[in-house]
Image (cartoon, rainbow, N blue to C red; front, side, top):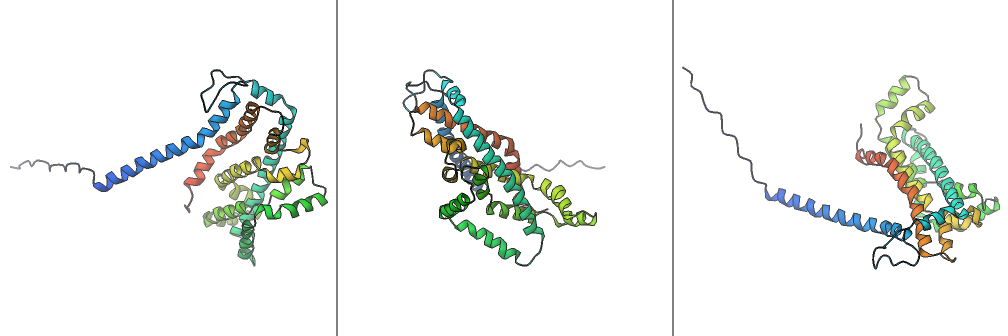
Length: 290
């Protein structure tokens, strides 16, 4: 006759150790610090938008929140012909530069990462060495060169000198270098040429890093001030950042200036909102090699 044995008693849940408590406490403090940093980061943008919708002469921040809001400042800025022209110039300057820089960086990065030719490493590091040269040091020689080529007050004179971007080439090289070698070997076995490999294999796989670079390059050109200030010497060729700086010297109210600044931030927010998922994917896959 078989006897039934009672099942073994389950082990009781162990209380959290001191190490776990210390880790949870550190995570809580880190969360608080991140929340505070986010608040301090967002506050200037909130202040700009609040001042932009505050009526002229009304008391507003930092003393108090406005009692009423108005869209007159925004409509007055949008109806100004100079502002629309400056915005168009900034879009042309930023978008054309982004497209050319990303295409050139992808092609150069593919060549440095997957092609073997004499002096490739020396050329790459020499290219990166240009990062140690301040942009202010090359400003006057660049302006003299562009002016002798009659590029002052032209779009090509505004765009072309900013296209050499060694950071983008380096990042593309590192990303393409970490792609699995089997993909390129399979493409070569299937008879794919260099352009086919680049257009149909490399570019689709580098969408995350291209989107990330696109965000940074767009923001860099959209907010660029020094070179557009030097090369664009007429009101019709000014970019938005340069044009807004000239409003301070004119009889323009603070609310109008804040309205202009608020409107100028909107394209940056739209670009970031559209491409942020690629930015997150790029960060999530950093350091992974298939």
